[in-house]
Length: 156
Image (cartoon, rainbow, N blue to C red; front, top):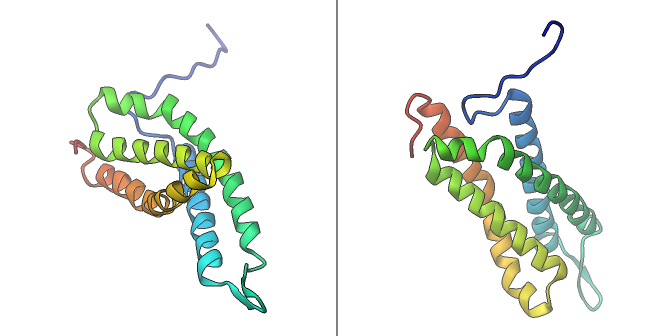
């Protein structure tokens, strides 16, 4: 048909540059806000008359982290639709990609538990969420590095 715009599907799991930048922006914001919350919560408490007081910015880092987490949930849906199934069916970087996807799933569940769980569940979920959250960026970078290193083979 003349004048009709069609978009051919991408034959590879590779994201467009625009989507790739979006992934790194959301992942970076989520990671940085969580890391800064940890720093302000545990490293920058202020002494008070009756014990340590929270830093005034601590709550704002947590609010930003929560907003970024919503964006990360949206991002996970985008990746599930555009990137993950293509890469999985083509057998590309299944270990590193599976690790990133599994980490994302555990972060979603542990984050939900931190927000809605009982005190006992929060005590269990918190160190898991913090440790895995800090490891998420290096995991994603490893997944990306493997793609750049071996674009021809790309199997890990």
